[in-house]
Amino acid sequence: MALTDPCRPTDVSLLTDLYEITMAQGFWETGKLEEQGCFTIFFRENPFGSGYSVACGASELPALIENFRFTDEDVAYLAGLEAPGGGALFKPGFLEYLRNFRCAVDVDAVPEGEIVFPHEPMVRVTGSVLECQLLETALLNTVGFQTLVATKTARVVAAAQGRPVAEFGLRRAQGPDGGMAVARASYIAGCSSTSNVLAGRKYGIPVFGTHAHSWVMSFPSELEAFRAFAASSPKNCTLLIDTYDVHQGVENAITVAKEMEEKGERLAAIRIDSGDLARLSAYVRRRFDQEGLPYVKISISNDLDEYTIQSLLNQGAPIDSFGVGTKLATCFDQPALGAVYKLSARRDGAEGPWTPVMKLSEQPYKRTIPGVQRVRRFYDDAGMPLGDMIYDPEFAHDGGTRLVEVGDPAHEEKTAGVAFRELLVPIVRNGQAVAPREPLEDARNRCGAALSALDPAVKRFLNPQRYLVGMEKGLAEVREKLVRENLSSVKGSRRWA
Image 1 (cartoon, one colour):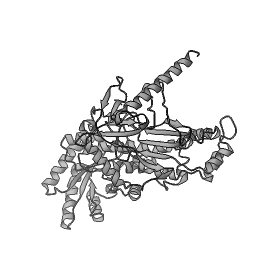
Image 2 (tube, one colour):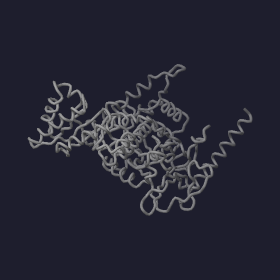
Image 3 (tube, helix red, strand yellow):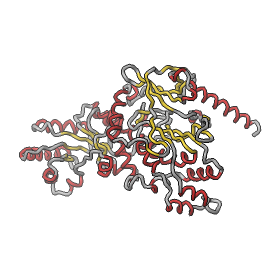
Image 4 (cartoon, helix red, strand yellow):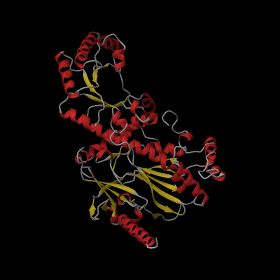
């Protein structure tokens, strides 16, 4: 989708797992076209041992849904698929249904850049079960990966303590689409720029880059290479000084910096991409200062992540900016968010009452939360978030201010506060976007503000404080009732096994 128009039908309708389409055929064939479902996207644990996550990707969902089509080519491909037991996998009538298919779902989502936590819905989709099911894989793919990248980036940017972080991960990303998603999500979460030129054009992200080791190796000497680059790019001159030896490299950079001064120009920075970065950066800073070049900045790269950056700055390394590639773009220490898409309520038609449903599971931690869920975030008088409440207005008690912490075995009731706001906002109604797509800068600013307001104890890397996420008391009671009823039904059936 990155290298083509992201709204082309062929980039969306078949970007799915096969079982979504086989289930859709089942719904069509069994007369369930009018049955409605409410699905939520959520995750069970913050990635990277983090105390929070950064929601990302939702702004791309309206265009995806508006343009969800099955072209003649798509239908012809599906018609040619054979069932494992023989014969066509899909029936002609169902394929004709797909040919004329249009989404009419409603979607609510947490705005991009907002902070989110385990168990609470990031995206809620309501509509016919068939439509909701067809959308599952594409929605998870879009929101899950970008949320993962944005969370990793927020941690890296926090470690940099206000110093610029450039995203350099395109060449190591999981394919072209992954590289585009990384550039987008990392900018929302705080990166200052990207090396990805296509992302710069498509999303308006600042782009940055100078030269590689191969430039230096293309000349008879490092000094000649530096002089040639300074002549070619005097307004964008950052010299990579570790091709051979940093100590000699900085001397050559000093020579070129003084030659540039004579022409009324300035060397912007040097970059070090290997070695003991703390020690070498200190040496380089000292040499530039000794030569009256305090304005030359020091940029560092080389498989950086939040822990490496934190360690360098804790050692007092005089680093001005960071280039972060592989470990950000690949989310090296956790390559998947583990986001899931679960049915939480159903009804027979568009106007009937919703019936809450839940997945029980053999593993209690995988038990889902029922209902047409919403999320409230409570604040103290200073504007710091205190906790989040998952609730369904149909079952809310006491004005919706008392909650039960998710996963709390004692079911201890807590009062999160009085001032609150709703996190889920409408983005699609009846299959159409309900607002213009917001600029990336809006999501970026939202992310910065949300992180600034969050308790530092929740943001720390080591043993972060657990942020309170709970179910409203009435919804918790509904969930407990469904657990009891389902367990009773299972135990009863097992007596006859």
